[in-house]
Amino acid sequence: EPANRLDQILARGSVRVAITSDYKPFSYRDPAGGAYEGSDAELAGMLARSLGVKLEWVATSWPTLMDDFADNKFDIAVGGISISLERQKRALFSIPYLRDGKTPITRCENLARFQSLEQIDRPEVRLVVNPGGTNERFARANASHARLAVHPDNVTIFDEIVAGRADLMITDAVEARLQQRLRPQLCAVHPEAPFDFSEKAFLLPRDVIWKAWVDQWLHQSIENGSVRRVQDKWLAWPWSKGAALAGPDALLALMDERLALMPDVARYKWNSQAAVEDLPRERLIIAALARQAAEAGVPAAWAESFFKAQIEAAKTVQRDLFERWRQQKAGRFEQVPDLARELRPRLDALTPLLLKALTQNWAALSDPAQRAQWSAAAQARLPAAAWGAAAAQATAPLTDGSASASGR
Ligand SMILES: O=C(O)C(=O)C[C@]1(C(=O)O)C=C[C@@H](O)C=C1
Image 1 (tube, helix red, strand yellow):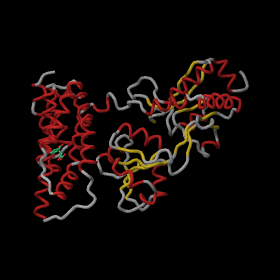
Image 2 (image 1 turned 90 degrees about the vertical axis):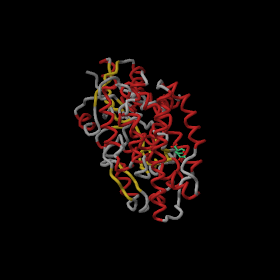
Image 3 (image 1 turned 90 degrees about the horizontal axis):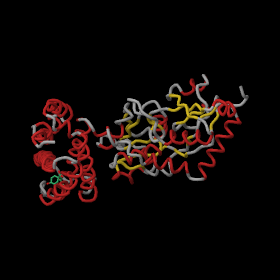
């Protein structure tokens, strides 16, 4: 057998590439199976083609990566691995292919509020963090005065910010960039100039001849622009298309999100002594809808009644609040977002998402056999206790049989 890893790979006719499967945009694989996707998966394919050998995937995971390395299970590992001096006590790294670092992600209207660590490290700031990793370490070291909320689910953590239950998260700039594309309500705060410094590279065995080949290939691929092209493509990838908005919970979460904006809408109107109801605005929403619904493949009349129900529920929330404030003889509210510049744009951003969710759920919504399931999901998700009559108004179109009556 040849003495160096490069000659072994060439003689074998295949390169064994270890990859994790849960780190978009670098690597992802549907748990139900299918091909590896993501920028590092594509770069690994390019590397194998340049070597002129077959690519053999080796599934690995973050906790087992260094054990798999010690067991000589792969020739190279990819998937968004950060260079660390701890790992380099045992392995080598290629030259870096991406500069990264911790940066905030927040609702877009809060961009100016969370530019610096001084602004974030305050008791009134609600900072959400996923436990156990470098994000938590960074938050505890740099924002110990903020109100830290540990949220254990990596998938739903960003919805905490969307729904206003948290103000921001501090995470890798590359993840902040990806999430702001997946969730239009969120904006990455200066991802081009993060708070600290880290780099992504490929993990390699201690074989300098093999490392020299990988570095040379990577250097050329960076300089000729192909690495950048691949990364841009996977950052913009519609990861959430397909399954993401299917199922009662996704639709109900969006409805919830819409209703959750109404207290701010009400505060704005209370301050400016405006009426809760604005019929010209309602007509605009409904008119825009008719066009979009037809394209989305949901009967326009039903989509219209669904949105009218959301608007009725919105008015119920606002009227309930007005009633309470009248009794309390409440004064002016401070720091209320502007209705025209902030709140209505956010409501408008939700409209196409809601329509997409209706489309993806249309088969289930219009199936009479699934009505009981929708009712149960609606009751669990929008408890009457939280929103009073508004919850029932908002969910009525999902459960009253009108969808199956309007045909498929
Ligand atoms: O935009 C407003 O002013 C709102 O109060 C929101 C909303 C809506 O649900 O979209 C609700 C009531 C108004 O009549 C118009 C629109």
